[in-house]
Amino acid sequence: TQLLEQSPQFLSIQEGENLTVYCNSSSVFSSLQWYRQEPGEGPVLLVTVVTGGEVKKLKRLTFQFGDARKDSSLHITAAQPGDTGLYLCAGDGVGTYKYIFGTGTRLKVLA
Amino acid sequence: GAGVSQTPSNKVTEKGKYVELRCDPISGHTALYWYRQSLGQGPEFLIYFQGTGAADDSGLPNDRFFAVRPEGSVSTLKIQRTERGDSAVYLCASSRQGKTGELFFGEGSRLTVL
Image 1 (cartoon, rainbow over the protein chains, first blue to last red):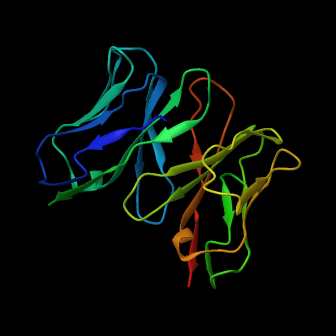
Image 2 (tube, rainbow over the protein chains, first blue to last red):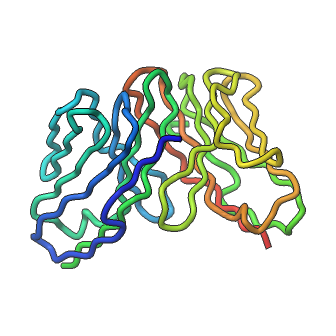
């Protein structure tokens, strides 16, 4: 069974601080996606990484896929209140389009 | 429509009743997914379709849960003899077939079993 564990589970920080969210598994994934979800809405894709070691940047967000394609991280620089939300990683197993979601990290950025 | 549409948005039912949740995906998307999400947690995979067939239904918790997609577009998730533990938000997502397919989610159907 493929599992994706995220840490931390909750994070409350002040505006302007930096943070990193981790997504770990013992399984290899073909690709790893990061989503953000607001209350009452479905998750919205932020980025997809497909190559081991790949790093992608989206404004103040930096995403990295582990060399072995088993883990990923999301780093936010100078967090803003608008970054508040539930961050989810999701991976699809090798040879399948079945996407498994991580346990989630709830981020709150205080002004 | 432009996005994934799910109905009803809210459903309150009594224990033991039957419910159906509908998902209308983005036109042309061949893959359709159902997930269940409890408050503050990540979505839990239930089933996904490629076209009309269920490509993987390993996440359905038991035989009370069943999903269909008869014409390869709209899908219905059916829950028989509902239990209080079935209360959750049921999310549907669709995707173009492809290695790095983005999942486009609906807003979900919130099911409450009293």
